[in-house]
Image 1 (cartoon, helix red, strand yellow):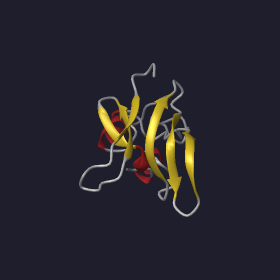
Image 2 (cartoon, helix red, strand yellow):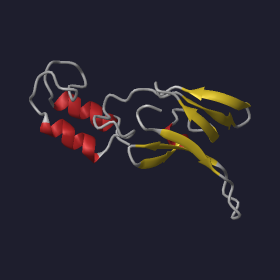
Image 3 (spheres, helix red, strand yellow):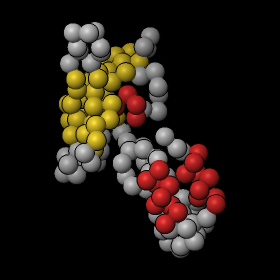
Length: 126
């Protein structure tokens, strides 16, 4: 897409490992399964990523259905660095803006980066 993200999938290996759909974002590869809200869903292939971040592909939810899908990204406000996960780099960004007004690190929109924002970041860790 225009942001430089790409999607694809790994073929089933001779060792019997299943196919996995992947996202390449800012130099890192993520298994799409690991980014889903529904942890039972399995994303086996991904064909395209649109400029708005939606991913087209194929997968299944065990004992429910399988087929083509469109995954729509869910924003994670605590992902201050935009790398797809909330981790130490986001914590560092929040701490750098501690006490500031009008920062993206003001997760609760109270007007200042403070302990409440730190709590929200830690609650979304991972």
